[in-house]
Image (cartoon, rainbow, N blue to C red; front, side):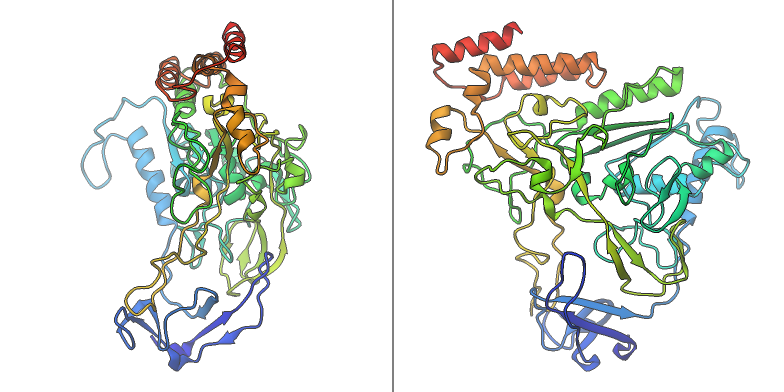
Length: 518
């Protein structure tokens, strides 16, 4: 609670590479560890900071370095998860008394985690916890979803809620499966499967991610390493699937259409939420994964963009081929890049372990970010899962969405205004800009929209439903969509307002008939 034992300062600017302007110290007498919604001095509280001459200035960056105490032993969670899984799978009686209620019924096991818990699975496998204390495999399958990080849990002052924002780790140890060198740090080959391969306890891996993870999760490092000079080959037990254009975890899958500019953009965002869903492809992959584990039925072939196919490119408008779309300026180049941090000599970067001694860490270099090529509509047209909205688009879908209120939202102040609340960014919502319904309306827009209208694409409502039906049937044949979900999607498209009510021309009906006949 002694402010003299900490350093507290502000900076007025920061480059994209994390280089700060000159530090302006805040004297220890001008702030306190306190909660002060009604003003200075407030109530002493180690979880809050109060400025004597508040409020906090949202135009400044505040940074602090202090000496902490009593670090928790964070790895206990991995051991507990391992031991519970092993007990339920193999044992009949608990060491401390009691019995296993499902003893003798378990044939195979798998674990699923999304986002943060996907990072947990990465660490669980990387540090060797899929081998129990008797040397047996715990989980036959593991499905880390929508995450490209290593869980920062095996260092002193680990960050189990790490999001890889500035100064957070997570890109030190390998975030790829096969052994591959860390070229950014000149470290020898290593991978998330290294330990389990040596102990013969590697699970089958199902890995799913979408466009948002390339922009906000630094996922390209999982595909081509921290320098992205070559694709990293997938081991035979890894099955990887990419959802083009999808947001973090997928959208609501709505087929409801509204003209550009007629629907309110959610507060704090620059674009509408991206509706491309992942639920339906996940349903199909769940079924396929269980069939693999239970009976050895092969998974559908992995589908994801690569450097070799020319689909994975630097995240710039020029490299991606992003078109000039009114109302949708390219902002994908704001993706979070991986950093090469110097946390001090006490950290083992290859193992994401040890004791960091430099805070904030020194940024030694900024690594490249890679995303995917797009077509003339701005939609990703790359190797990936066939989502029905992606195959029968109602607009442009992007995996990025910038916040409009900065780090501190409109309700950042509390009482005296000296309490800040971090605004958690809009990127995980992805972005969406609908097409116009008719050619006349898109051409009359100021400026005109270069993207074809729904009328020019599908002709009529029936034509659109035919395209949806064809896309759904194709996805079922490829085992990326369950037949029951295909019927749901077709029914939803049929009940939608796409080009209805609408008086089609003869040319529109001809176009629709052509689509339906094919």
